[in-house]
Length: 161
Image (tube, rainbow, N blue to C red; front, side, top):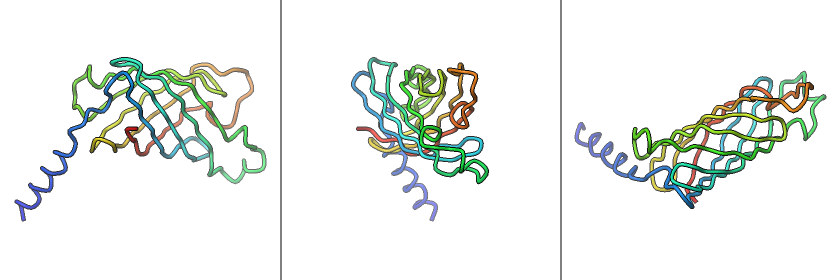
């Protein structure tokens, strides 16, 4: 039984011989769940590598599950956010594991100017998981938007394109 467990573990870890961020021309697509106060939703992200450790992209979120008290006061504009983003992919600099990437970054969205920090881990050449925390640095006006002008957390699947 120990040999079967060992061989299975060896096989799983040998499949993970992919570098997460390859640099210029690298493309990633991510789909996951978005969590924040008063709502949960879906998050889609696309990143494109410009250099060895730099990528740009877009991210979009839509709040699906909203607390009952807020359902009547929200419309599409409140539930939706679109961001242009810049990432510093420092997984290769940290040299933790070739399958791991850590990427702090900045974003400019419909709601605010913000920051994020994320991590990806790839199990195979084309599939991995990601997690990302985003936070506003500056809101566009004094009006407090219900969603996306607060700390948000995303988790989901990541794919090489």
